Image 1 (cartoon, helix red, strand yellow):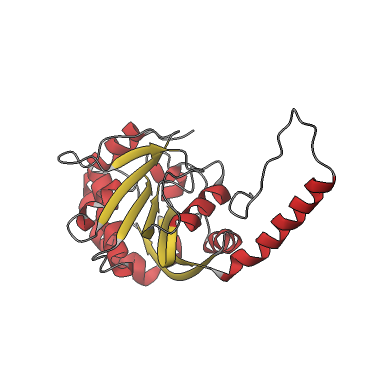
Image 2: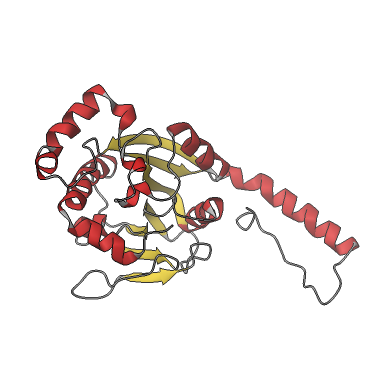
Length: 253
């Protein structure tokens, strides 16, 4: 069961959602302290974390998957959000310097295809940060929050998925140690939980955040495979009613 854009908006409008937003944003600022002059893409439901960059980055956009739905963002001024097919992002190759994926990867039905699209639009030297539920954390076990939906990850699982998708992990952060309940005393003490969690039990955070860079050299080998397949098709073409489909490295799943 997926959370739609209304559920996500309502979560971030609650006290617990504002706490989650604040602590994730604090860790995100450690990974990306400056985005001045850069093109920034938020994919999934990343708009709660994009606002601080509107005045600093050259360009900021938020793209939301079709299954989730879309809402106007920001509320005032020019609309910078759009509804997209996560397997066909409407952006030129190598057009974005930073990509932030929140409430996106864990909900995707084609994770590798989605990451291939991120790889395609990310400029050489660009970076992606992915925020996902931690398999060992309490937040992944409670479906009253968005982090209790979709597939949670361990650090090892996320590393393997990124490497298979031609990314190299470069930095890690964790966040959300307070229990995921709207009980007022817990919400008020969330900062203390966060400090204690980072010191005492970092493995049990609510979310894992990984920064990764694009591996350029990894794209060379698949191209040889594509050419080999093209040669096979030239020898034994498909019947004319079924058009042959040209496979490129970024289309393969």
